[in-house]
Image (cartoon, rainbow over all chains, first blue to last red):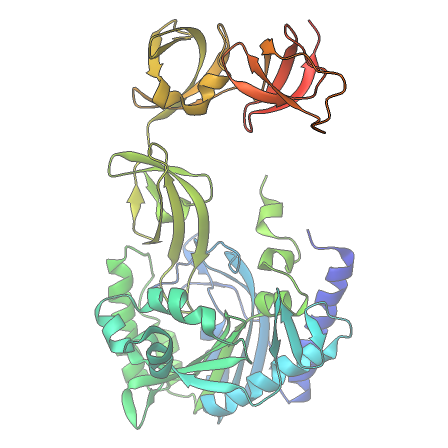
Length: 308
Length: 187
């Protein structure tokens, strides 16, 4: 279980997260976690709660607030995803999600970098740090000094797997190649943003105008660990409906229970302006900063401690 | 039936009709991607290890494994006869199946035998066994070889290195995991 000392550090870090975003004009929100309809995603399995669901991320509610005219929002909340359990996964975990109206994923990557560096510098004596802007992970260290690398998915596949992502997609090995062959190399010299995902792997992200086969999606990696997933948000309700339909079709194929098309969300999406948003696995980031090897060491009461 | 999400270190599953035990396991799931269960397994009959990545929908049979307490009765030629202490059923294993265990088996010893269906696939002995020394050279005073241990033969024919004071007729305790001498025992 987490020690009182570590609990203090976790608390200090949570306060630093809030200071960072409030300092940049963001409003903190706390949206409902139990919802009648979820945004369909093929590989994310929700927990049912009576007739409703526990949310798997706060994206739906936060976007509905943006559609009402909010322009900068952040939220720290627990999310629930079935069957996720491992060194870096818990089925209940803490997500930090934020949205900035008027931005694309490019500005958001820059802010993401500033945020992680600010958080690392916010609390003195963090065991995960070997010095200013220097993260220690196991036997190795990662320089947090900017600017961080931006690596396209295409280039990452070519460099580390010697193949084109289109080929991996055709053979249904994209995730496997990414996890086993590419991820272990990412974010060791310094953090890296893996960006421009194949459009079919980013159903909530806008396609690139100059290359519609890829979407403006990024993932932040530090020390081989995936930390955050961000987009230039897809705001066209027509295209969003088609992408959801495809996700629903694939989820049903995989035997997952998803409610239905999120109609109210699609209606309100028409009122949302150009926006970028990102979800960051806060437990994982705190794990790195507090020098822990697993997220269960970084959360307040880990699942393995709760089990009878 | 197990699914991939049941996989964890130590779980025993059946693949292609043979029992496997999971020796290493890691769950991974790229953002928005499929859950991947990276697994290392050991075939419980052949001992051969392999690694594979499974997905959520992969399923595994539960292997029919049962551990039974059996008593060693006697050996004849190449056959080692055991009796189930609950059902009195008798079986025999050959030398190859027993491996190093034959060095520590004595009449009436109770052992755990793991069955896969009706087939015995593994024998676990008690961690410590007491065996009688049947042959030991007396410690020669003034031995200048500088050696502080000597080989003795125990009742099973096994040769083990012991401290010089151990003599013929003594009973000694041996760790069956390492085959090493632990201590001399009374009686």
